[in-house]
Image (cartoon, rainbow, N blue to C red; front, side):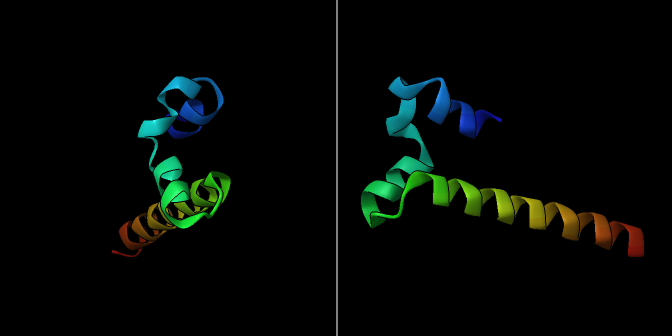
Length: 55
């Protein structure tokens, strides 16, 4: 995805990454933030599909 692409291929654009900015603010490494973002987005997608299927 685009978010991971910034961290892997576009290092010059890293300063605009939310995960990087959160790392600078909290000290929690960017990969942890990326995993958290992925889990939250995935969970939202699962909840949306489950809600749609149960309607």
